[in-house]
Amino acid sequence: MKKAVIVGGSNGIGLAISRELMDKGYYLEICDRVEPEEGILDPACLHYSYCDLTDFDEDVFLPLAGDKDVDLLMITAGIGRVADFKAHHIAEIDKILTIDTLSTIKLFRIFYDRILSNDTFYAGVMGSISGWMSSPATSVYAAAKAGLVRFVESVNIELEVAGTDNRILDVSPSFFDGSRFYGGKNALSVTGPLAVQIVEHLFNRDTRFIPRYEETFKAVLERYHKNSHEYGLHSYQYKKDSGRLDNDKKVKIRYLSAAFDLFHIEYLNLLRRARQCCDYLIVGVIDSDKGKGKENFIPLGERKELLAACKYVDKVVDACPEDSDAWDLWHYDRLFVSFDHKDIDRFSHYQDYFEDKGVEVIYFPYALEADGRQIRKDPVNGN
Ligand SMILES: NC(=O)c1ccc[n+]([C@@H]2O[C@H](COP(=O)([O-])OP(=O)(O)OC[C@H]3O[C@@H](n4cnc5c(N)ncnc54)[C@H](OP(=O)(O)O)[C@@H]3O)[C@@H](O)[C@H]2O)c1
Image (cartoon, rainbow, N blue to C red; front, side, top):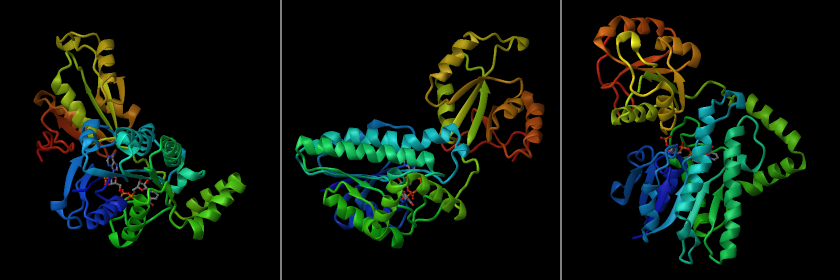
């Protein structure tokens, strides 16, 4: 049985490509953060694996790369947004480049022996027209996609020189509808025809597919190469006038503080779960609690070093006397607090302090589900 691996196949163009491949008799191995939207694919003809390209886990992909029934890899997972560079938080830059470029290139490395071999293997990825020219107001996304399209272009030469007929297809469209990319809904009536074209190019083992190239993008690219400065100014104004520029903060920042003395597995579980439901986790480390008769075993500097080495932690800071004071410094969106009945007055103060700040207070250690939602009752309000 022929199998296809589609990374990002649960929504958007990935879902449409999945359906097209299923119609062609493929068994699908879909890797994504969420399961495929129900009612579109036959569940008997697919296997879903959870993957999050911000936390790359090669063990998800190694068995698929080693499966001789797999002869196709298509990567459609990707994120980005139309916003001025100044509106990008450092965590958002990290996330866009990690998903769109770094993890994507790692995936090709994992499957590279298959692509490099003389046995037929189909490989492709969603680039973007933004990767082929300057793209003000999507500068980070353009940088991520430019890195990707240059990578594909370069590796295709290596494949040719190595003597295999396999290639990596770069699909570089401009805006298309029918996906969740810009907050919309999956509409296969819109993405379906594009998916048919993409699969055709995959099976031809082509190197590049820019949809609507002859009618539109050939001239656009010529205009860009003739005068990139003028093109850039026009492109920026066009995005601004179209109302697509969205400079709102998009990153979810979480904060938690604890002593983290004698670091143990429960601390790690807490940090992992806290990080899973945010983009940037700031950890405040409490200095020894001498006033309460508790001396820490590990010096503060060493505890901070240990936390900084943990992959779930983005920033380590000295904790403030009150977590509400830390909000003035870090402007977080969600606060995790260790709940203790003795501190009920303190938590009531938090509830009041954060009321008009849009900060959600979550109580741990027992309060977090895998997706970060609270399962325990709010100890202050009892709801
Ligand atoms: N739509 C456009 O106008 C356009 C234009 C040019 C290029 N592209 C490129 O086309 C590709 C697909 O876009 P689309 O419009 O089909 O978007 P989409 O509907 O958002 O589909 C992308 C899929 O990737 C998944 N994904 C996102 N982050 C992930 C992560 N960290 N790990 C694993 N999977 C993740 C998404 O899961 P969640 O739903 O959980 O986020 C979603 O299922 C992207 O690479 C995009 O850059 C899109």
